[in-house]
Length: 507
Image 1 (cartoon, rainbow, N blue to C red):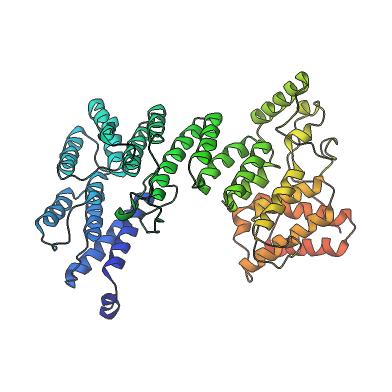
Image 2 (cartoon, helix red, strand yellow):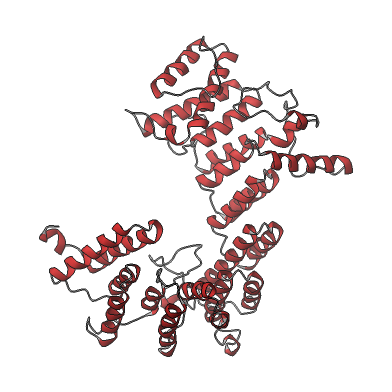
């Protein structure tokens, strides 16, 4: 690094670089990331760069802790407390959090050493956060220290707070509830939520400004100190707690409890659920092909002003057309059979048109339904939902303010999985012209991504792309468009696409 370039870096930029390498080590567990961070720190020392921010030394502590250099990390903390780095550099909650994030701590001795720092933090009046407690809770659970684990889960004296101290109680109760969730104690976490809802909403209506430490939907909420007593901060803490409990319910397949919490949350706080929370529900119901629930989630998102992202629309659309595994298919059939026997109205699946044909009629790229399942009347109505698929698809274009017939528009770019499902739907609905329209949209988009080489999406989605070309070729032959068939075959040769099943290439 040349000297002029080095001196143009600010303290915040240097800190950010080291933070990136530390986070890279956490996610990828690569020693190379820590080595790069240590090189940056060495360059700072060699060039006598004076850094006077607490955040920089907190990242240095993190790096040394990850590298199992505990003595060096503790020495930095001691120097911070002694004022070696300046009067403005002092230990804070993130200093102790960096010390607690010791990935090499495995034994009771390691836990005892970290508890000493925890007691020191409390003696200085520094309030522990869920992020600080979490590694201690996990380590205490792993070494079997149940009494310490119970002590860590104990809440501060929230009983001394009146109902007017809502923001303070929200922060404390949220931290404690997150700790219970880390211990997989959902009922105790929910009791903290019920206690929180008893407090009065704060009157301070200032908006919380965005900052790098604030992450919407994260369990570790970081709000600037000046705004922690505002109404919005209270709702942010409350929403985070709601969504953390809902996530555990969904993981445990307690969908009804999760939906009750979602409805209660939408009634209680003015902040809408985050897109991440909605995606949890979408993934759960898409896996089970519960199309009616997916429609409800889509409507909720639009009502709350939460625009579905590519992940959500991919789940919405592909869930209508994917072929479930045998056990899931049997559950769908059993549910439909019970409803038919008791005469109940099928609210889970909407009826579709033209789908009660024998297996093998449509060349949609989808697996055939097993023969013992086809004995049930209108089996395709249970498994495939082409009309719902196309409805979600049109909604995606409306949300992006794009014209679905404009193939040159770049406002909405469906991925290969979405195009594959939509072409399957139009094939089932016997609309070959629309099948070819979506094929052309797919080819145009891939050309824009990689004009002079094979698009990378073809490597990532080999099977969907093969089905896309097969359905397009079938549609061209249905309408007897030999020119389009030859064009499709030529594009296959250029991209090296192989059809999923042997098929004649005679146009």
